[in-house]
Length: 387
Length: 228
Image (cartoon, rainbow over all chains, first blue to last red):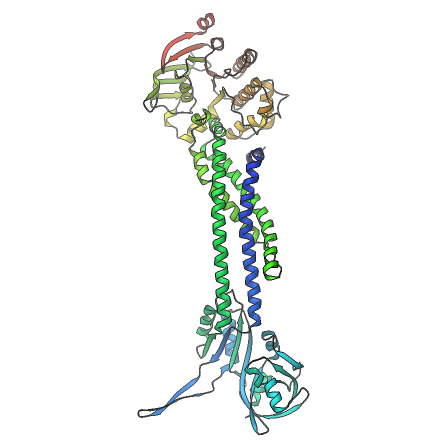
């Protein structure tokens, strides 16, 4: 039998001999590591769940062109500020987004006016598939455009102009006149209800602003890079634009998540400290009870390190078994919590087994430091005498 | 004359204000069976612990097997013990959760590599071939002591120390153990230092020294002890 196998053999024998205490230590370690696992999984699942919820609120970052501003006044008189529409180059924004590595859903918008009958209508050029992905709550009557020349009209505008799906409209832009077909009417419950939507390239062409946009909506996944950081990074790449957070939803969700995570971390820390103390106490008693055995090992030639290795091995074995059991138990607890609280399943995160093992091993070894020092220092003569 | 395996000069051991062993000069030739006798607290076990490298002297010099034990570190002393010394305890001190053969293998583990066949043969030599897989709790006092002897001789020590090895045994078991030690010594040629209260056990040795209050007070050869 080689030395390693023998070491493992006596470790297992020693643990089996003190079955009651071994089970108690395993229970403590498994409980602590299962809590860390469960809270970790719940936290991760919650992050994803919140991110999904945030998605429903739409974009959390917007990119606007910095307006060209001109102060109007003469002598001591100030007549205010005149600003004229400014645009961003779509290609430039796309390249900046690529460079920033930002993980975000995006939609490009161009706002302009098209003449219809005797009025100018506010029109927004969009990519309809982006709109459907980013604003899933918009309610549509009819169909989303599938071919060129099809448009969607906001509910309020449709009522005002007496438009319905299937109608055709003749719209005149600065550069081009177009005949368009209404494929559907849409309601967002916001200002979009007064707009007319058509495909971005078609509007760009009609008003002579090819390749230009006036707004980018981004939905950065919450819980990843903080929004503020994402906004700053993008701002650096787009000096001609103003990158802003749509604060309310994103900030609230991030803040709430951070607070819940902190709470979980504190609960875990308290449990880990109590578990560590419990392990330390039990290991100390074990070492005290086994002082004659330790003395004997030293008397027959075991060096302090060799004897300590046996006890460290026992602690490590407990840590490993406790960690694996803790992972399994933690996954079950996480499922229970997410089902009860979020009415959803916890995600399966296999690598959390290492977190559980790490926590359990750390506790087992940390709790054993004091007892190990005693093992190290123990005088064989005195311990064999039972002193 | 045989070479000296143990040589002490003014060997002293104090525990605080108590002098457990007063300056002692002692020479033990290789292969000798030396018995140490004396009342409780006379310094017998202290002497044995010192020559076995289990304890350190407060003063004096101590050479065992040509090695100056005072020069060793604590782990150096542990290595000295596993290479050079076999110890038989009065209370056996067997690991309760290991079988007889595993208890012997424990000494092999600290010495080099555990070898079950060798450990079995060692137990067979002490007449315990049929009790290999029994744990200490399932063995009689005499059998436990024989496991202890098998463990002490497994690494072929040059020096065998017995701290009242028959102190807990009945007369029959005592005789069996002493005969066994005599046989093993004849085969292995190790030096024996045995602490005992028992005059009959002392008679098995070549020489007996008497300690009283930490001092060597008398020394007798085998014949004289046998007469007693």
